[in-house]
Length: 193
Image (cartoon, rainbow, N blue to C red; front, side, top):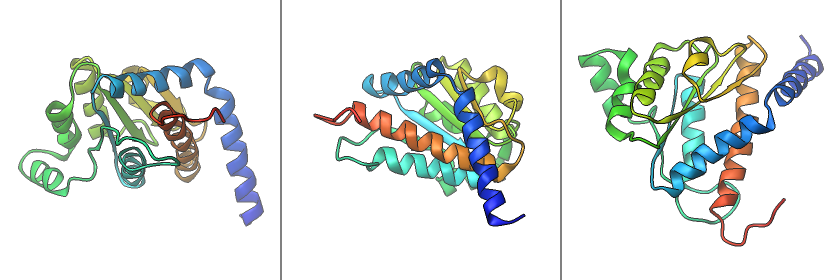
């Protein structure tokens, strides 16, 4: 496949995703996150592989800054603590490395954001099950259909594709937009752009 064809397919998937994600879906997810942060509740983020890198990316933007100077936000990446990940996976099971951390850091009214291109990653699914049992809100970024996360998500952003790189590209666009809108809510004298 040539680069122009690849870019054209990327644009097509982004346009389809933009058409499928309703205003209500986006507004609901934003309200869940900003509401939790305003209430002093954490936002937890997890994923595997490239999605783990995306989880770290989201957390870095929210704890540090995205586009403006503002207060730090209580966002925790469950994919980045190698001591917890390796100790728990070694002594117990990798399937519960995220749910164990949800148990530790989560609380009613908090939010869990999970990234899984298939929607079937066992450790992300287990984390969502734990979050639901703790009365947390759940936001999933997946590929087409949502997989097993479909029924566990309060807000499901399913990219209409089964191609992992194209799904992940759409996820980056989505979470950059969400970071911008969340940051605006916590930036004094922010302009409405």
